[in-house]
Length: 362
Image (cartoon, rainbow, N blue to C red; front, top):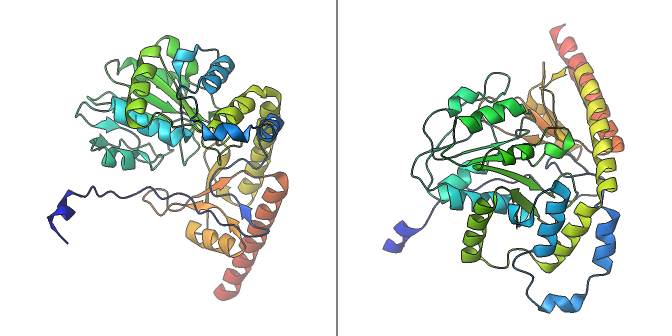
C-alpha cells in the first residue's frame, strides 16, 4: 500500500435489512408494504413508451413534482424529489448542515443519520430519548448546526406530538429542522401544516412504505421555495438526472390514486391493531405504534432467541444488537394471513419454551 491509503475516506456503512428470497417465507423485517402498488401504476407501466428510455429524463421531474404538490396542497416550488427518501435526506445533510456546529438527532433513531454525518464530516450529538422512547424537547434547545428526527420514530414507532415539534422549531429559528416522515401515513399527524409558520422546516416523505414502491425508489422533501431551490442547486451540481423516466411516470400515477392509497392504509392499520392485541396476550410490551411496524419486547424470552427461532422458520423480523434496544424486535405489519402465521408460531414457541422450563425446574 502506498501513501495514497491515508487519503481514502473510510466510514462505517449503514446496514440495510436482510433481503432473503425464499419460497413461502414471511418477510416482516424491512417495513415494506404487503400490498401491491396502485392499479394506476400497473397501467402506467404497461403504457410506458420504451423508445423514450433512450432519452434523458426530465431533470426537473416536473410531472412528479406537480402530482405531489397537488396531493399535498402545495405549489411546485415547494417540492423536491429524489431517489428514495435516503437520497433526499443525504442531499439535505449536504446542503444545510455546514455550520461546523454539531447537528442533533436522537440516540435511538434511523441509523443512516450518523452514517451521513460521518461521510460528510458533519459533527453530531445524540440526545437520549427518555425511558419510554419519547423525544425530550429541552435537549434540543442547545446551540446546534441543525436538527433531524423521524416522526414516527424508527425503529420505535413512537409518534412525537405536534406541540413538541413546534416547540423545537420555536427554539431553533436559526437552523434547519428536518422531520423525516417515512411512516406518517399509517396514523400519525404530519408536520406539513407547520410549513406556513416556519421557514426553516423541511418535511421528508417517501413512496416506499405507504405507496408500495420501495423497489422504485422515490422520496421527496417539502419546504419553503428558497430551501427547495438550494436543494436543487446541490442536486444539479451532483447529478442532474437523479430520477429515471419510469420512476417519474409511475410515481405520478401512484400519488394520484388516492382511493387505493386510503384503502391500503386502512387495511394495514386494522391488521396492526389486531396484532398489538394478540402480542400483548402473548406477553409482549411496546409503545403504541403509529407506523406499519411494532417495536416489541417479551417479558421472559430474549429478543435474539426469538429472532433466531423465527428466522429458522423463514419468518424474518428485524433485530438491533444495540444498547437500550437489544431486547426488542421490530415487526413489520404484513397481510392478515402472514401475521396469523407469525403469531401462531410465537404462541407455539413460547408455550413450548415455558413447558420445557417447567420440566427443568422440576
